[in-house]
Length: 307
Image (cartoon, rainbow, N blue to C red; front, side, top):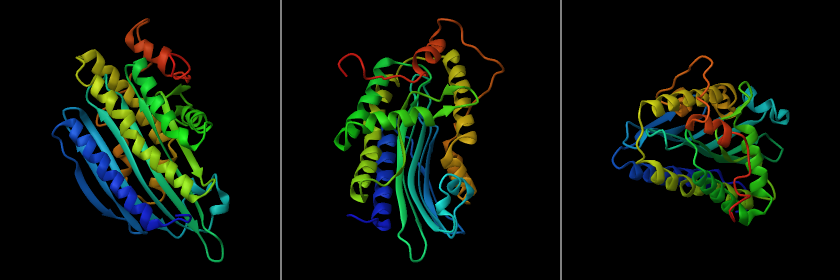
């Protein structure tokens, strides 16, 4: 396929949502996803699925959306003014997982396709997506596995792909008002339409399908570690950073809200519980301090140990 086929992409993304939901539900061991089918008055709709109160995942949301409109919202045209006046279609699967055990990191992934059209002009289209990991307690083994999986899925598309999208992820998932990373990164790409449709579509699929390979082994490794109130309180405090990023900096959240998307589905990325504490500083040399010192600063996780 050398040209965009909206229906083909839609079918793939719906199947991707099914696959990821089945895997997460199976890993949790019993909790099921609630499904909501919704329609958008301006055009399009979606299929939202949310798992709550699981034994492993306190909340997990995996959403499919396909929205369309006659004009683009300001969040889209601000960095692409040539799109003004074009009709658009935006499709994607987006997911966020908030585990119960503080030793299991939160994770996020998405794959999206965008196309803007107007009469007598070729369509403008691109893919975007990626995945990133947000630990509360860092383990080098987990960070290396996460980034090794990301690097390996990028390898067939060029040796420069992983370093480029890893750096972009580090830059994007950064709370400028805190001068602090949200987590340990992963991959982030946007506006991807080169070298051609077939190649970029294949890369987007590799990212979507690589997410579970990156995440589930970490869940399985950490889900049974004992934890108590100290770890829970730190997890809730760090979840506050997740909320701050999504509401202040995330382009996808802004696009969804400004384009008239379903608010419940857009904000399913929020953790079910979070807290804020004035002027908090972790105890020196504590496991909490190690997150800030050893994991949040951007680094090359694969430069040592034969990775």
